[in-house]
Image (cartoon, rainbow, N blue to C red; front, top):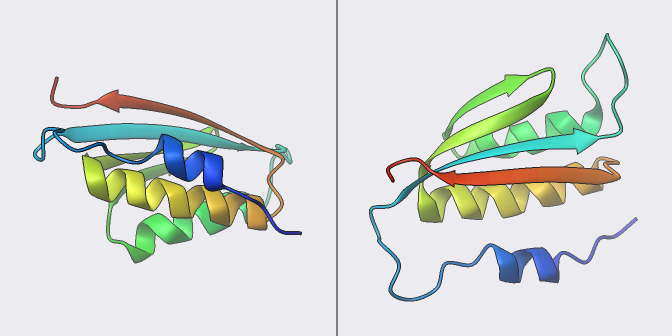
Length: 101
């Protein structure tokens, strides 16, 4: 299965003139939920991206949060979403907040 994430890429691009020091907190949940037991491959693939990039994150049973500089968080989020969908996710819900505002 291939996923066209071009619409996601355009939504997660930082426009010129943004505050270069801005920090973000992003929280995301991938579905389908598989109940108790092993971690779904779509969730594990998304978190692997965050680990590989060395971002401060919290991986929990109901979702994952990541904190950091805006550009790093958004770049990692794009890759994490791609990993989740490649791992079988049918839906990913994302919330992004400015952490320094």
